[in-house]
Length: 283
Image (cartoon, rainbow, N blue to C red):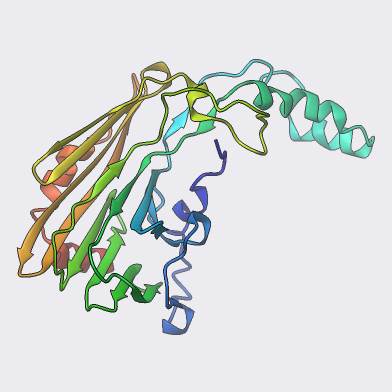
């Protein structure tokens, strides 16, 4: 399991308000990335998405900043766990002890660790070659155009843990698929260490549930120690050839203030409409 996962794009909300980006800073491409770490990033510091092409599917890799497996790890609370002690070992040219105390545990244990949330995928029939991909930094809006005239606009709201998507000039139905991480299954075997990542099955989770009802999908996953998270996506047709949708991720830790669950938040948000929420996002 990649320890960094999607941490980078979640930090993109940090903007220098004294030096707003202009159109010359935008990202412009004539195709979608085919690997996640070259994807178009959207995020507000809490939730975020990476937009790319996974095979023949348009994929939104989804994440939330506080989705972590927080189980304690033996040995990480020893007196040597300080910057000063590590600095002393570097000065003595004896870094092996640092690796033994603070790298080796991660080679043996699967957590504590950032864990992945999930993904949305959209499949299209017929001609679906991408013509252009544009990320406006000023608007925090991604726009994708296809050669057959179909377009997508999507943004993660600046202050709310929700993301909107809007397809226009759609020739056929677009049905989102919610892809859950494979937490349950057999271990892949082979070397596992803190650099090459872990198999998610090492976490010992029971696979979560994905429930589809009409134009809504909800995925619920339980993690370590009673921690749970939930992804909800809901969509609707708003006109001929136009489909709008909203997704959100919520997390709940035992004995802490509960965040609004994603299913309730999405159900309320989709009533606003894409255009109205984009105005509040832009402001």
